[in-house]
Image (cartoon, rainbow over all chains, first blue to last red; front, side, top):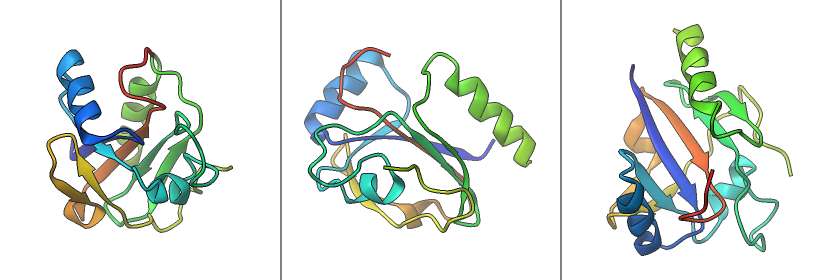
Length: 89
Length: 45
């Protein structure tokens, strides 16, 4: 399945590296220290937000939002996304 | 605060990865990209 997975938070690259190493995540973690992407996608109300909301967004190959998920439950979320990807073909 | 709507054009972004690399949306043209936000590094579930 041709899907890139990227984590995003306001943390520094160093903090994300430590987080990734600790849990051995296979995907890249991105620093949105300026918070502009988080605001644009709806993970933060504005750039004064202290933390990002736990949302996720699936972008399609055509560059449009294919699915979005507010306040995900981490334990159930991967299955939900996989089911959606299969549905999208 | 509302999560972006399905069907909207994905806003372009350029961010720095944990490895210090520049990563932008344009890098993944033609692929599905799942962006997931988390409140803070090293916080549980």
